[in-house]
Image (cartoon, rainbow, N blue to C red; front, side, top):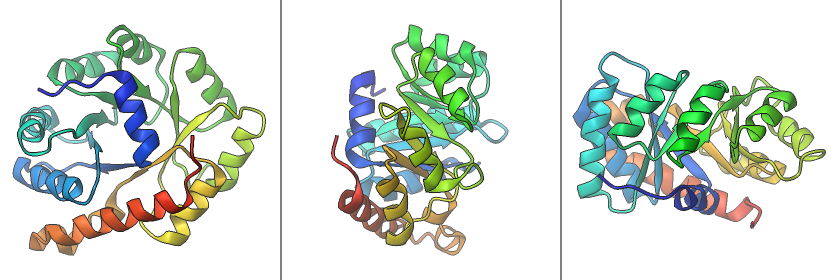
Length: 225
C-alpha cells in the first residue's frame, strides 16, 4: 500500500485545494470514480465510512489506487471514534476526516503521524482541535454554519487557521471563488462532482471533466501559501 507522510498529505491539500468525498457500496463503482477523479487531476480522495462493509470496499480501493493511480492520497471520512480510526489507519488510510472533533481520534492519529481533519462548527471547537494538534479543521456543515462569511470571521482573530469547507460546495466558478476568496485552504466536495445520471451511465469522462474544471477554478482564486 502507498504510505505518504503527514507533510506530503498536507502539502497536497494546500497545493490542489480539493478533496472529492464519496461513498458507494459497490467496489467497482468506487474504483471507477476514483480513477475518473485521478484522470481529472485529483491527488487526494476521501472515501466515507457510511455503509455496511465499508471497510471491505476501502481495503480494495487502497490496493486499486496503489496500482492504478500512482501518487493518489486516499483517506477515510465520517470517522467519529478512535477504534474506527485505528482500523482504517491499519488498512492504509493516509488521512482521517470526521464530522466532529474527538480528542481520542486525535491521539490515535498523532501517534501514527497522520493528518486528522475534524469537523468544527464554532470558533471554540476549532481552537480545541488546534490544541490537540489538528493542522486543518473542517467547517461542517459549511453552508449551515455561515458559509464563506464564517470562514472570514474565523480567520480574522485566528489567521493561522487552515480550513477545509465541506457542505454547500459546488464545482462552479462562482461558488468556488466565494470559498477561496474567503480564505479556505481546501474544500471537500461530494455529490455535485458525481451526478447520478453520469454514474449510472458509467460516464466517467463527465466526472473527470467536472474535477478538471473545478481544479482550474480553485487555482484561479486560491490564495498562495
